[in-house]
Figure 1 (cartoon, rainbow, N blue to C red):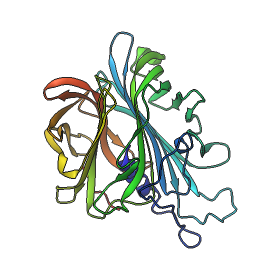
Figure 2 (tube, helix red, strand yellow; figure 1 turned 135 degrees about the vertical axis):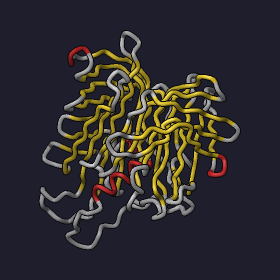
Figure 3 (cartoon, rainbow, N blue to C red; figure 1 turned 45 degrees about the vertical axis):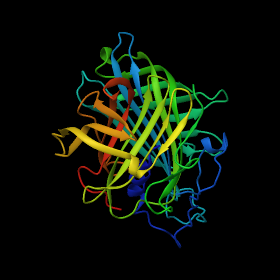
Figure 4 (cartoon, rainbow, N blue to C red; figure 1 turned 180 degrees about the horizontal axis):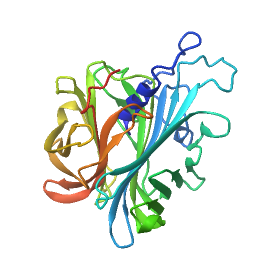
Length: 361
């Protein structure tokens, strides 16, 4: 998923000036059946949307790397009837990051542009997003091609599905709070098989490095923000070693308590179980303080779903991402190893927001 991405992008576009009355964004309502391949594509009538890939890569010598690539689409408050090609009616934003413990910090890049001019788009009908020389596209065979050209890192990856789509929440209707209007449409594709190359300055003098691995893709779209008392959120998506998949999140209030929580577990046999707010808990185990921002993050966390305890430990402590040049937030997002009831169980990603400052909606 990542519902948190929806809010980060809303922050980036909240100041866009409307040329007429604010547009009527498409609502998110329960009971709408998601359909594919149509829902792999963009939903431009909704306010915010993202395609988010996280995963673990292995180099030929067995070295682990973490990576994430995210494309956002945002419908702004500008009048959709404005005929000017320069009117920023839709914005496209990209984030990319790589974790290498030998580097010790997160390598990342970001960019943004208005849709149009053959340079930036998010097309309907199937996944096809471009931001200059960054792109994510789903082919007729179901494989995704992902390309990123950044100052600190470059990626050329192919992601091959190995499992069916996993619908989050109520058949794809994912609530983010007690009120049903705080919701998104949301599905995941766990256990994507990854192959390709990465390049960054600390690896083999900047030469392309062949990698393989496993990834998780979230696609989510919405038109509503979280309630004003929300300060931030914790989220994790985990590819389990037995073929299962776990997604869990909590939304934190400004007083530190939990406003809402949810989890979805698909076991190795394909059985799906949903966990409600009273069945999901996040408990910090160890914190890391950023030397750049001073924010303190619970980078080692225990997540409880029902009677199961999952322990998450970071690939490296410093995986803080400063996106103030695009989505306007500073947060921690990184690769984690996972134990289930004390035994190795899988690898995933953890996102922690609202730890520098409360989210201002």
